[in-house]
Length: 308
Image (cartoon, rainbow, N blue to C red; front, side):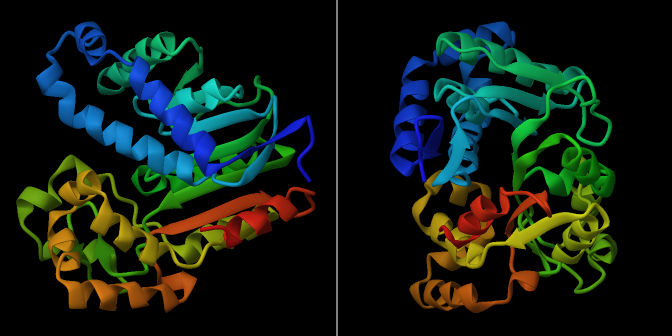
């Protein structure tokens, strides 16, 4: 039950906060600090806006303490983190260090300042981040990040250790048991997706994006959770949700042109919606929650997996 010490992250709270954040952002200031033009960052900015809303939607109807500590993994421009800070939470944004990622931190800082909030930044990958000197987090969240972490097993274990005894993690990423690569819109060789690089154009197989993929899957996540004595559960209906997003979200569709064209054909769209009946182990993307096995948070976690 919600009390004065807790808050439910409702859909209306997410939308209202997201709109408020966008109304306070001056993209010209972001561009100036990045020493570039508005035009050159417009695509990245639009993607960041769409992905931040998608990240926040993962938290719909989640109940948290008013002073909850939240870690966003792979925060990018930090828009989701900033919205959570605007809701009153204590937020940390995790992004790898290095020149290309430094721009994300600069953008995040100027956007946060425009919105009158401050968030903490950790310039590290999830595998090597040192959380021992920090107070444990009540919530860890990531969206379309885990599939790009080189040592995802170590990263998940490290993140497991970063949450409080009643904390939880919520992640959304591709599940490569399903033989499809969403970033490139390519079919994959079933069971052995890594072998696909030998039958696709070298312009793709040699790209930084392709080589960042670790081909994470449901079984791998479950094994890691068992090894670390963590409760882990997956949502049903994730494929149906993604297909609807392709049909209704023009920005998302523009980033996945091939499958978006298929979705635009009504008979195929209806057929794809039937994928909601596919077992979780072969559905993509996979949305899942992790928390300590003996935690009272399991009730919150189980409620989360039934939400859509």
